Length: 262
Length: 262
DNA sequence: CGAACGGTTGACACGGGTCAAGTCCGGTGG
DNA sequence: CCACCGGACTTGACCCGTGTCAACCGTTCG
Image (tube, rainbow over all chains, first blue to last red):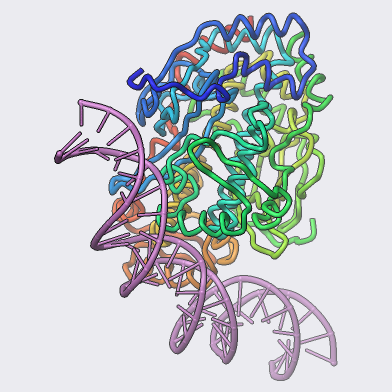
């Protein structure tokens, strides 16, 4: 914890897992109790602290209770790609049990509090709480899908489309965990981090931001970002939502997990 | 099966799953028998046939027994991104149990034979063959990691680096399933498909290919592709291998899955 | 009160996109 | 056996979106 700056209150979530998973499942009291227990042991990281660095062994799974993080890869000459932005409720290193070492850096964008899950606890989820396991797998599937869509953006969308797309996507993710208030949400990234996420230069990011601001489509300052016309921005960005898979976990999953639990 | 053209013999694999998983685990006889059983029921698709289209419901998991496929997303105006290339042994729709509809097209690059796995069978893997489940999860983690690295390529590598990187990566994946022979492997993609994979135009792909060929680094024709100097190509492409996670599945996974199986 | 860092913009250069014009080759029909 | 056709392959010329370079400002922190 190298930085004691106060995080704005609205990026805090008391029960990120419960809040997120509730969207897809009607959690039973038993499941809620179990999740609340899981979320008890946490670890804090300061802004810009490396949670995991390239080459570190994977030993635990984390869930973000509070704060934002990113995953990045860097080439020798300094070129950097941010491959993923994690919000409260997101899972970090879901595949830690089957991998030896991290190929990415995982860094705190803000001060963070992470729920620490040991492998045995994760196993317990699969054994005793199959519906929760399904919801966790859903999260993982969602992450993969968001990653594919970012590839689509970086590969085939223009800078303007890409930027708009990122704003729309992030806003939707924030809505899901109830962190959009007064049409505004907190976006704790520097222009440089955002340009490394969207694979452009900082200079070009500014040019592109300016275009969206001139059209009054967005406003972004240290307080947060507001999107004034979602429909128009989605049109510009060629945003379509199915890739986010924001529907409840399907019935068949019950069948699948029931088979697992028996 | 709209196209009866003979696939070259060397893209065929009798037991793709067994062959692939053996790299990470010493499979027991029991596990081999089980996998052989799994691989019995298959479905064939002809070259260019859509295996799944955007919006189709996900109902099954497939494993590629023979042939290549790709996943793609398309924008209204025709821009296309190929997000993933699957080789024999690769798993398709691992997350089908927890998702409703596909957000991608999955298309056969060559005539294909796919092992069809029902959800109940997949559940059985997790119950009775936890080590196999670990290896499958490893495959899934590997896929995700390859996807991240492609994002790194498309976002931050030049066209030349990106192309070299793709060749090196694909060669390594082919080595793993023992499909490189005489320093050469089959690469059943058109220039247009490859350019949509690497997010450039076909014209620019040609320019870039020409540069690699002039340096005698590669040779690619209808017979296959050969890489004459892997070290040099890796250097040019800034290829590093850890992201492929090509080591055996770690010990701790046993612990994890033992917990699962009890 | 200076250093460090994030934010911001103008001027110019270049990698890769666009357009257009072919060539090559395997399959098909006369 | 040849003529034709469609699809994949190939390349030159030109141009635009984005990168590069170089400033400068504002704020925070030691």
